[in-house]
Length: 353
Ligand code: NAI
Ligand code: MG
Image 1 (tube, helix red, strand yellow):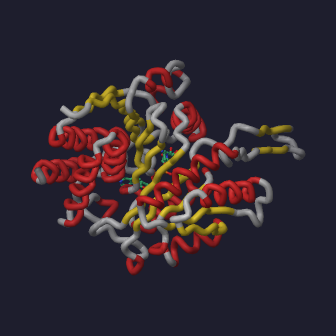
Image 2 (cartoon, rainbow, N blue to C red):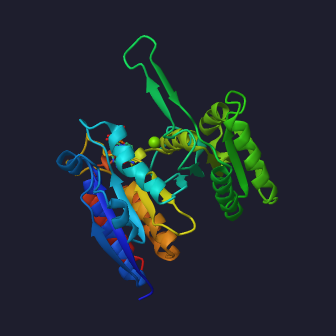
Image 3 (cartoon, rainbow, N blue to C red):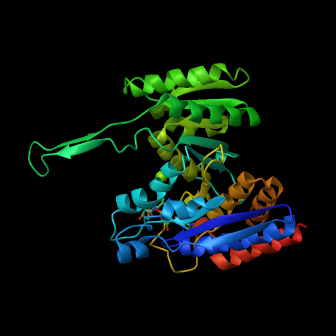
């Protein structure tokens, strides 16, 4: 046995209840093949828990999660409960409590997954999103509610430590990849925080002379993602810009159902969290047709983070092989159910040995 990892599993709401168990089966198969063990602890936190207890997780929820080597999350969110409640009561709370300051979102063309930009294949981009500060801040307030003079103020918070560690991570990643990096900015319109972002990023760039980098205004960068995405390798962005760019990037590769993400505490001081980019998809929940690729790929990222890169590569190769054969769920134009697709991935993974 070359490793034993304790994983907190939070399937959450909607299709999270379908794709998370599917992905854990795939990861257990990889563990068997590569000689390590995953011990899963299931947590039933999410919208039902909220309805019963008035909160998304118990008061000591963060302490319970801290006992684990990693967190594997499906999706949270349900019609009838404000999204801000589900997001801040669970996802954002976990990201901030565990200093998961990097949100890593790889975007890659997959076999038989057709892109609206078919002539732009193949795409291979990693978005490094700053994940704990920036525009998503708790600083601000509202005054004079409901009156004509009502005011809402929301402050963006950018710190030297926060920008610098995100940039450091991104430049190191670029060194391991194609050696090119784009930093998303808006220093022409946002005159304090974004010039500060640019300054800190250039200081970090100076420590990585091997990386060719440029700073691009977010509006122009959005256009570049559509017009010339093949030239993009690592993209580093603030919390808001990174959030928007990663949905855009997911859309140009084909389906939101395949996009993975990792919320990383790179120092390993706290558990990191791995989750698909998609949400709980209430429109298809319970039908057994959700695409499990985003969850399985997030699981591969988790194995890589835990120190099992070969198992991670094998899992990615297995779902790519299944897609190559033309098996796919409905969102990709196929007819396979979640169960059929997952079983095919497991069979492929076992057969690779
Ligand atoms: P969504 O990602 O759940 O769904 C958007 C569209 O993509 C829907 O038509 C859905 O059927 C489809 N889709 C998503 N994942 C799919 C998959 N794996 N296979 C096949 N089709 C898939 O986003 P939406 O509808 O904006 O949000 C629904 C709920 O999810 C909301 O409550 C929202 O707050 C929450 N949400 C949670 C996230 C998270 O837990 N990280 C992220 C995004 C949304
Ligand atoms: Mg988003």
